[in-house]
Amino acid sequence: MHQAGRLAGKVALITGAGRGIGRAISLAFAAEGARLALAARTSGELEETAVQAGALGAECLVVPADVTHRDDIDALARKTLGHYQTIDILVNCAGIGGPVGLLQDNDVDSWIETIQVNLVGTYLGCRAVIPTMIAQGRGKIINLSGAGATNAWDNMSAYCASKAAVVRLTEVLSLELAPHNVQVNALGPGSIHTRMWEEMRDDAAAANATHIYEQGKIVTSGGGAPIEKAADLAVFLAGETSGTLSGRMISAVADDFANMPSRIPEIMGSEAYTLRRVGLGPQAA
Image (tube, rainbow, N blue to C red; front, side, top):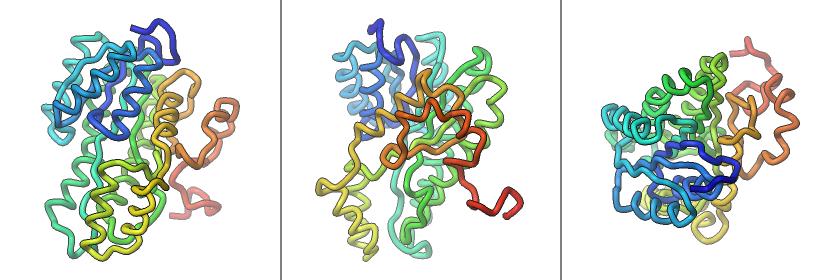
């Protein structure tokens, strides 16, 4: 195990760790000295992530789990605590793109599944670790959100609704957990070339969803955001440098998070990086 690094000795539980952004964050945490509990539905992919993280010197606990199943997530938290005796960091990275097409044409079960994975899965992950973080008087929670939260994309109603809800959940939790020194933030990774974007691109072509199809072509042909930026932002939000920054959605590609530490008091005293009706005040609902 690493003795140095920005996350040296910290225990990080990461869902969606089998591939894509979850794997990138897992490996970045491993390189920074974290001890890992890795969760996803596909055990083979989890094992691949664990092998790569182990090569970087990280201790890894692999726990296949479905984030939509309460029993799975409760067992994941118990196994992590049993192995490491603590959980310092939670990254809720498991997510899906959901159905592409007009809302009334979407498969109902697929629409609901998107909310279950992206929003309910995040809720269940938070619910499972919060008692531990409160008891130890510290913790960092990172919820994956993204452009679907800040942009209304036609033909992506389930995805956008779920990701916007994740940001508001993040804000509420940050208020509830502030007295316990637990910080909760949402991470916007940018449009990164992952399997999810390939699926969204292909589904958009079938549904004649022009905007998503064109965006998908750009992302999957070399024009997407670098996955390393999302991993770097996760390290920042998980580490001590992020201090009391909480209840914010930070973009890996649009925000200068490396220079945020000196601005944290200013940010926390404003509505910056939150879901608000800009310039209209708190009573403008």
